[in-house]
Image 1 (tube, one colour):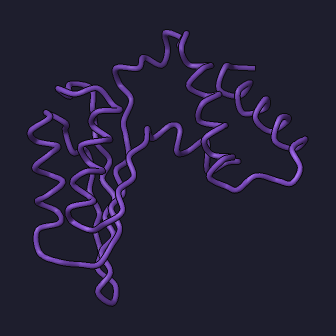
Image 2 (cartoon, rainbow, N blue to C red):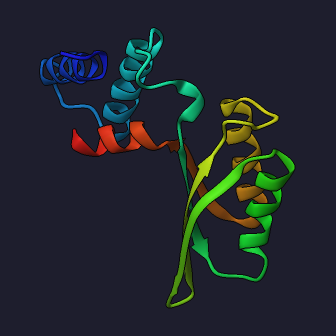
Length: 139
């Protein structure tokens, strides 16, 4: 069993013994923390330097949202690998797959910069590593 699978199994075992069941946000944080712990000694077939991240932006549509976030990514030397956006009944939704490998800021600082900009733009902003997001969705 690989480290990530072990972390997910430990999270599942731990959380099924907690009563009452914790909210989904707690489940996600526990699983993410365990996966990060397990990945501290990563295997050579999955170097951390090649991890992609997913940036999600949700909120009321207004001019300049795409610019607001692409500007920060450009300033931080983060490559946009893929982007998809839509507007439904005045609501804006954007998902970007980004490569933070050469970012000037570390991942927590980048996340903070994006969240600060989200607060100014009055939109919700979520940034997480693509692999963690995929694993959390399996739980």
